[in-house]
Image (spheres, rainbow, N blue to C red):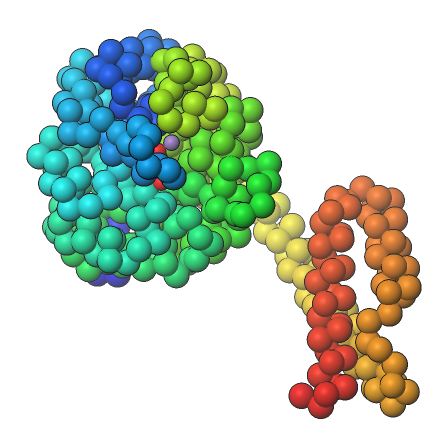
Length: 359
Ligand code: PEP
Ligand code: MN
């Protein structure tokens, strides 16, 4: 069996978008039950309740999860309110305890996915399980590592698989806690379109305000669902307080989501025409870029013959200012055009360098 051939029938059991919600961490039995009760009472579709039992915290000597007792609380949540349950497993002891407690869905956290030894250990401990196993992206932007983790699971006969996109660490803080880097997740999706992909807006945003739009963006590009942190008293949460939302706010978020169908359906004809036009324009873009680079080669030759430096700041200023002006005139995003032109300029410098140093 390989990743391409996976049937992924497990997701058919759920209506889409498939939602997993619950606190970042299990803190007490009453916190777990109250959060579950309030999610249930909102009547939105949340079939699966999440809670971290063992917590990977950045610094030591803080709260690191309640441990196995929390598994009993998850069981109670299941019994009282009928949720399926989900938790993170990061080593063989976690796996044994979670399987013994009959937790329905296990996920491998972002800090574990980076480590092939850890993933292998977890995969072996889970060998042959029918449980659904979800793999979060690794904290570093490495698609192969993410795929490798799934291959290790499949290698142990674990076939009910899915992935969670929770964003990637950056040194410089941006508006996100973890940068979504959509391209990596979309590359994953295009290689393995049949593997269910969920968005984790909580760990991408790190705050409450961005959750709804990130979740909707993910559904817009074809994700199957989301895992969102919800707590009965978010401000007092023992971990990730700033990104957790009450069950009622969660319900409103879910209520406003629009699921997007993976099939084109009746739009086929119109969509087909648009796609033909896009492909044609893409072709023209590539043709134009190729012509532009050929001119750069000629310029490189002239600069070489006359011992002139490749980078001419004044010229670059004119080019980039003109591009920005045109972007504004045509209503395109300025930062997008800046990115495109920086990339073109960088390539042009490279092309000229190839001429100068005869590479
Ligand atoms: C979590 O889901 O609570 C968690 C620890 O997530 P991540 O592994 O994405 O940091
Ligand atoms: Mn968390």
